Picture 1 (cartoon, rainbow, N blue to C red):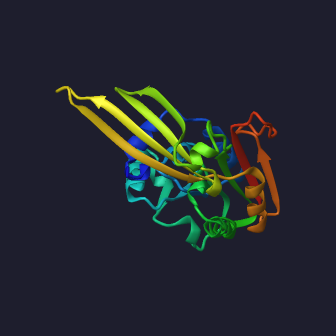
Picture 2: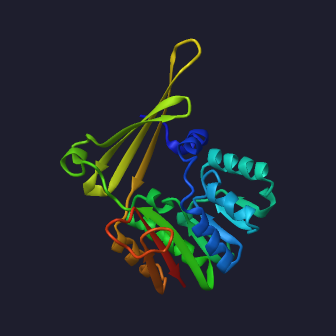
Length: 251
């Protein structure tokens, strides 16, 4: 079995180096609501540093030591590490005894919660840390798979792609288990060393995806009184063309 992607933050950052779609959305929310911002699943600090550079204090929750170290180094390099407090905690059991105006779980963070109990616990914890009039925001991708159904259920690849990445070739394929709403993404990055030998880096990403109304109901069950869903980070209405669902829920 390949190593978990979150145990290799350098590879994780390389895979996501060009992704900026969500930054203006989360930065705008922080501007509107003020801080400190509680970020669930801060990872290597991609969103965290954008918020800190905009002047916001951030409480960054991340259970992976490797990702926290990578994030702290990124913030130090950006000169804004003093605005961020890193917390080694699981979002399902978070209890910081603080109240904040904004909680975010960006970049599909909730898709790492495999069971209904996990999801409910994390959303209740987010709600518990919000003051009156506070907001919670998250995003997930719209679950569309190239060969969903028989191929995925049988354990075969549901999507395969190859592309150039840096000085190597990246191969990505997915195994889609439709019965359990789980997709496992395998990454292989092959490079040829100066001595002619092949060097391969591998990583696995496992996600439990959501459907729109499933997550809306979960947010309401967790105690959020108003839930808005958008078809992207520009807050456009949901349409069949949307590739991401963005959720904004209020206390």
